[in-house]
Length: 121
Image (cartoon, rainbow, N blue to C red; front, side):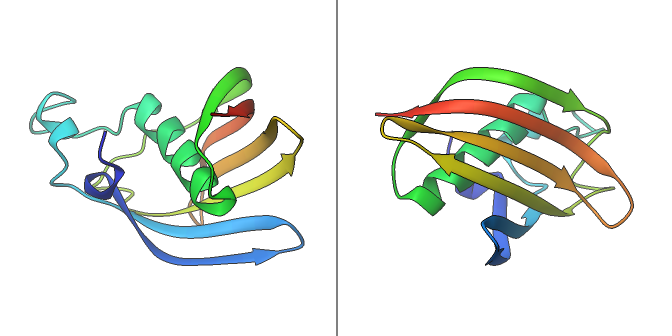
């Protein structure tokens, strides 16, 4: 997937090892042609992929998830109702990869919580 068509980074910062990204979900992304026409819902796999993509940007390395320890989808992300979101990512690096704790939220609600391990490739 070309992540540039799914979301854009509006702002980013890091405080005490916590990476924060202000993003905008793009409503014209091709994924919404099938998920679902007239009622676009962001697929969970795309949101998990976005976390991986943002982590790759931070680390400047390609990653592949080796395990997903926890993934809670606690709300529906849509480009219409929730176009502006915050993605918080904490990364603990190791020699061959990293552990990731991430959350996608807005000012009122959390939509996704993820704990995963990834390896470099």
